[in-house]
Length: 84
Image 1 (cartoon, one colour):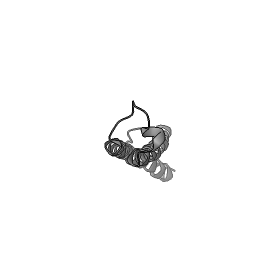
Image 2: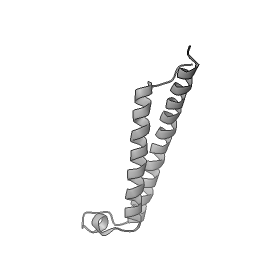
Image 3: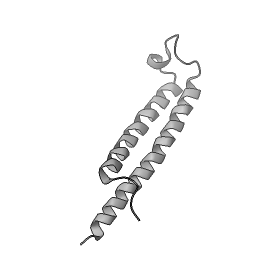
Image 4: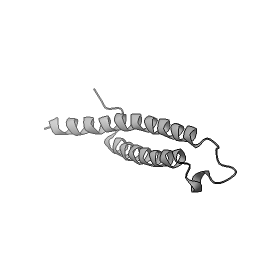
């Protein structure tokens, strides 16, 4: 069975997913506590907790990508060790 993506692409996707999860979770915390620099303008959303929940859900989608791409990286590493 062949992997779906190459090793370089899988590694890149894993790194980007990890950074995206971190960024979205930091944003979720900032919205949840109604941080003044994020929620202080008249154009900002009124319900910070709802926006925080959307950020957490988006981080969940990124976690799925992280699991898939991380699995691809592991698949490539195992496949590379078996070759003679």
